[in-house]
Amino acid sequence: MPPLPFKEKIIKEKTMAFLKRVAPRLAPSLKWIVILSLSIALGVMISLPVTTWYINYNQENSSLFSGAFLESTGEDCNVLGINLHGYLDTYNSDGDESSDNSLATSEDITQKIKDANEDEDLKAIIIEVDSNGGIPVAGEEIANAIKNSKKPVVAFIRSSGLSSAYWAISSANKIFASKISDVGSIGITLSYLSSTEKNKKDGYKFEEINSGKYKDTGSPDKTLTADERAVLQKGINIMYDNFVSTVSENRKIPLDKVRALADGSSVLGEEAKQVGLIDEIGGINEVEKYLADVVGEEVRTCW
Image 1: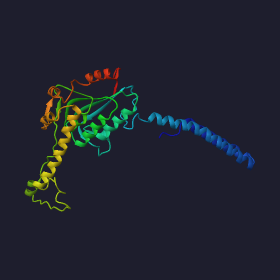
Image 2: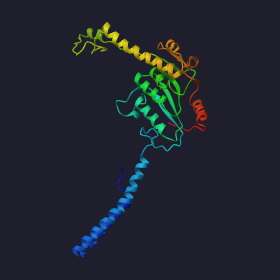
Image 3: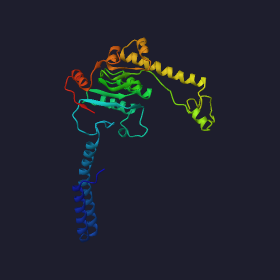
Image 4: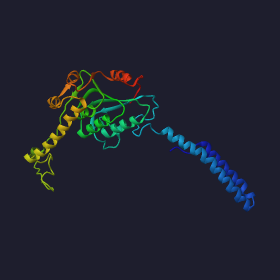
């Protein structure tokens, strides 16, 4: 917080100097009355402007939303733009969202959607997607936040909107993409690189000490047993079914048709439109033109 305003410091200094000059000349009883009276007056003189200054300071330095995404720019906007760029995770373990442009988190994006819904000046939300996916739960959380939004949400895919990143925007009111955007990749993977053969060659041996036979399942340093593989595959199948049914529900595509598409592959934007994964071909300009009709005024987007 900044130091006390200059004007109030001067008042305090001059008052204290006056007290030092006159105090020795006063009778003891009168001296204390004068000191008490001047102290009260000094307190009132300082507290009122300081209180006003403190309120103004906090108002000027508070961000529009708790997510601080407008960063007090003072932009006059009626649409909020949110970036979903890079790997999609539930949260940033480093704690600083702005430090890593290759990471998007559902924690940050869902908070921005919530804040936008509480701001009367914002009429709609745009989500710009350029991501190959990430954690399935993160995609699910964003898709639910979009579905629960009271304001229209439009997504547009730039280079790629794949896997959990596509899951995230599947509930948007409208999805745009370029003709050559990479779209879809509906599926789940838990594949990993095994180190067992290398460890054996290097003379390392995995010592298994755990409380249950499945506790070390998925460790790259041990050979996966048939039972362990079945446990992992069961979880993969459950997540896959959730992904497929969510896309079917959000995009209004028959379940069997989504399942036929959901082999993990992606399609380019033009084909994505034909099969129903997106609605329109276009980028930010087409998105803003569409939203101008929806909100009934010129679109001014803040990112």
